[in-house]
Image 1: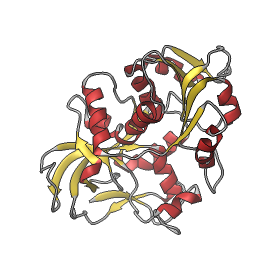
Image 2: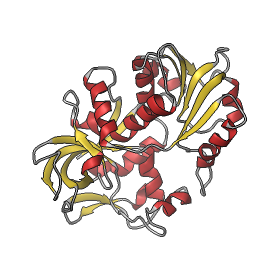
Image 3: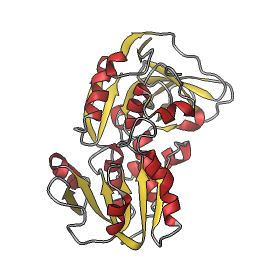
Image 4: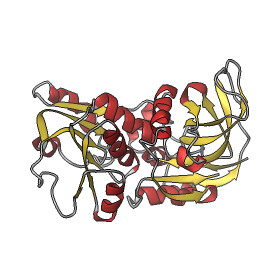
Length: 323
């Protein structure tokens, strides 16, 4: 089968489309014929091995432990391993795995759910990581409720585009923060107001927000605290602006300690994809409350270009690889 493979950590130039052996599902796994694969920031981190902290999490110290890139997947079950009871061959599914930039991939049964009936495979592939991360940020960490004022920083990106829609679905009044080129896009997601950070500061509106969801990772806590309500909650999602060692994740790791000395709550979100949250996301998608926002679809052979495009920050919503 064809797959996008890398032998060493590095830039997208290290990725190569080549023939590899088709995987065989082991106990608790399903073999998926991949139709589409999402591109998220995690793909870049695993490609480069940066920050170095991720290498200590079992992804390989000197080279990638799993040589095939890609983690979000949508496709059709080809076969199932021993003990699998939720799926059978022919089922359309979506979820997370390791190595989805390929014609076939194995995924754990508990990381996969039936594909939303109203989505294409490309749309479904955009949802598992970004959508579930946003769901956990809005529902669990932020505990967003009806009538609250919510600020989504990085509203034009993969996680941010889901977060805007989910916060609206939970009944909040949502303000999105993005660059000039994404203002109309963020409005189209349902945001009640949009702040163009190239023209105005997030404090310019004079609003104190009940919940701030920060997916951008480049503002000091001191600035965010000034626009957070006295009893508000700040959720830090990822870290893309730090150094090679921790990548900015120290901001998320240290946030809970700041909460000990303030009425405000600071939470660093480390998302965990499960089939239960995928099913919750499916319900919202099939109800029409949320829809993956696709910016661009690349063919499998152009997966390196897809990663480069995403990393450049130009995408409005999600980037997907079609297989």
